[in-house]
Structures are given as C-alpha cells and as structure tokens.
Length: 223
Ligand code: SAH
Image 1 (cartoon, rainbow, N blue to C red):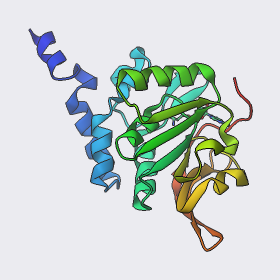
Image 2 (cartoon, rainbow, N blue to C red; image 1 turned 180 degrees about the horizontal axis):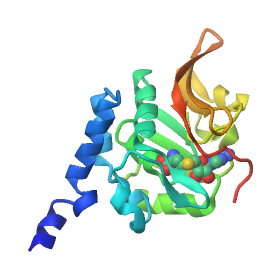
Image 3 (spheres, helix red, strand yellow; image 1 turned 30 degrees about the vertical axis):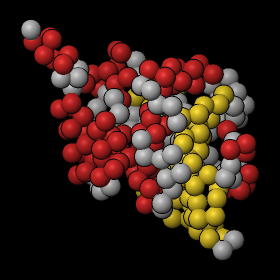
Image 4 (cartoon, protein in one colour; image 1 turned 90 degrees about the vertical axis):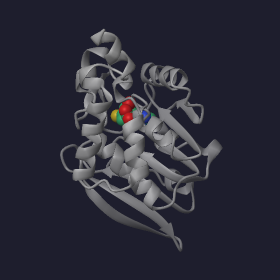
C-alpha cells in the first residue's frame, strides 16, 4: 500500500515531488528568480537523466557523473544558464553544445520553440535521445558531432549555450547567432572558469560575467 501511494505520488523518497520542491526552494534561495525557469526545474524529472544507482541524489544541487568522464551539470548552473537566455529574450531557436545527459536540453524544451543540441560522444547522445523520446520531448533535435563550430544548417539561433568549458570560442559559433542573440558559455581553464554571456550589438560583442562555474572541457573530435 505504501509503495503504491509512493508510486502514485510520482516516485519514492529522494525522487519524490517533495525532493524536487526542496531543490526549487534552494535554487530560489540562491538567486534564481525567473518563475518559468523554476517551474521547468520543478517539472523535469532529473532522476531519469542519470544512472539509477545515483537516482537518490538527483535533487541535490550538485553535478553527478554520467559516464565517459562526463557530468550532468549542477541544477543551479542549468537554471542560471537558462535564466540568462530568457532574460535576454531568447525563446525561439536555441543551440546547445554538449548534450551530455540531455537534462539542460529538456529544461529548455518547455521554454523555447526548438532546441538543437550537439554532442561529441555517440553513446551519450544516443542515451539522451532515448530519454527525449520516452518523455515525448519532440522539439529537441540532436546531432552527433564535434560542436565547436556550432550547427550551421539551422542557424541563426536566438541563443547558444555551451555546456563545456574552453579558453576561447570559435568565431563560427558567434556568427550563428541572430541579431540581438546571446551566447552563454563557461570560459577559462579548469578550476578558474567564468560563466559569460555575450550579446551581439552594433557589430560588437559585449561580454558580461555571470559568476564562477566548474565545467568539463570542450574537446575536439568525436568519440
Ligand atoms: N548539458 C549537459 C552537461 C554535459 S557535460 C547536461 O545537461 O547533462 C558537457 C558535455 O559536453 C559532455 O557530454 C561532453 O562530451 C560534451 N562535449 C565536450 N566537447 C564537445 C564538443 N566539442 N562538441 C560537442 N559536445 C562536446
């Protein structure tokens, strides 16, 4: 009986709606203000984007391993990057470099028209595709490719999120933004990365530092 009630409540213990609500409250306490973003963080089941063995930690505000040396980003970082796009009005086409588990793309899926997401590790992008299919997220388009040069075929984008860190970004990537578009990316060496938002305006790129973050590196080639 207890088990059935728990299942009906949408999960047991650490993956329950209450665990998600606690996460949302902690995001709010840590400065996430946009209610649309908080609602997306509440509704996307993060425990389905990680290995079952780690599911009990899904609603902790921490990055977790997803295999192949990669991680699902910390929820606060996902929320802040999403907020940084929406604040700038990017709600049409958004490009993500580094699909990973697919969690960031799933959070974006309910907030923007279309998500284009590129991942260099085939095994990870296949697993992410399966999750999108299972959750019925039809506006996420995936590609197995080195995404450092973006995804020109669907450009221009209103927003670009890079979810792996580099010391510099390719000009091709910035050129795939629409006028008024924004690019949000962690920049710098491991241990000293800044989350930066670039806005296009009058032929100049204006950088704005949003905070300190810690991402896995943006690597070349496919695997
Ligand atoms: N957004 C992800 C975070 C994944 S971690 C999530 O929500 O889970 C960063 C991801 O970027 C890793 O999966 C890594 O394989 C990928 N990555 C690194 N360099 C890349 C590149 N050049 N092109 C595409 N993906 C890349």
